[in-house]
Length: 407
Image 1 (cartoon, rainbow, N blue to C red):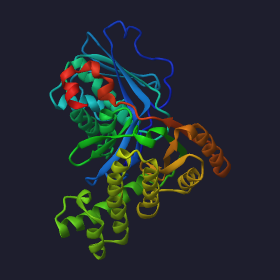
Image 2: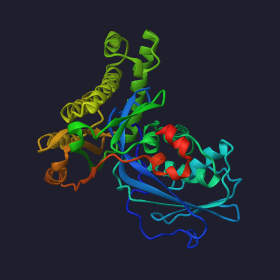
Image 3: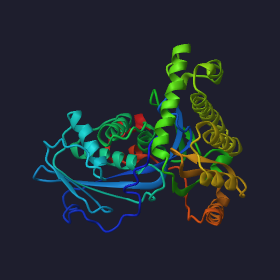
Image 4: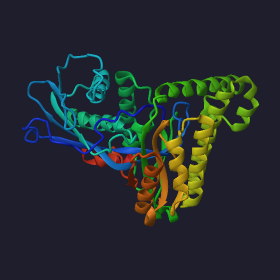
């Protein structure tokens, strides 16, 4: 996904700073997980397919009513607190409070005005891991504010609302993937999402031999300084090539485009635009192939798609780096590894690895040792199974019938 992670609320919660009388005033607790993307990178802003899953780290939002009508925001991890009145429409403050306040603003624009509240956020999402703490906070906040206001929205509406909070208040040009999977994920499954239509399907991670694997996320602990500017360049190049294809073939976006069409239009776009589009179109195809591999319970086929995806990111999208390439190459030589790839925006960040369950802990240790020896950097690893998203985790906030219709 083309966005720089905002890694707030990303470490184990420290000493509480929220009001001492919070729990005594009918507090409501909501939870939203983190996520990792398995396949389909840089596809979500051109109408493409993504294949993320929710992982067992989470943001917790605890909310209770105030009698003075004010809105009060606190966190265990940051000293800043914020109090607003209902008429406040101030711009972003460029700190952690922007994310929950952005969600509040989106609700207000919809005519949903929560009563006064104390909102306190904690979390155990690993710091700096690139597993979308911002979207986790946004979704947890949305769930809490909706519950306090006694308003129910569909999971699709919650995801879109959270994404708009980040786009319009925080001014981060993220796509919909993070907020959607964090809301809609299902335990034991990845989520195939069509980012244009917002249609989705839960694909099994717990079928056949695939059930005997785990996902190991490895945080390289590096983020190269070129990242922010290069993201924008890559996006412009992708959209340049997309514009040529839309004009030439009448497609809606790259999500509808074939490699044959791209090759036919190669002479009409820059070499860089051609390569960026080739990555996106081929990654969409890899997501479709992964669907078949997952229903077949085939980790070998799935792993090959991951490796091909990494090669495409490295060579066509050119968003990898030496540290990440080393992690992927090393992973593929370790026992039990079926596949590995860069995940997230790139130029550092994390790799995602599909590993036999019986080897996952040893794999994680060996990968860290090799990386430390090569770069003298202490990587972090997280061994993960797919968990439920926020909508399912907060079932008690919804009517039984509406939940049955949606999951």
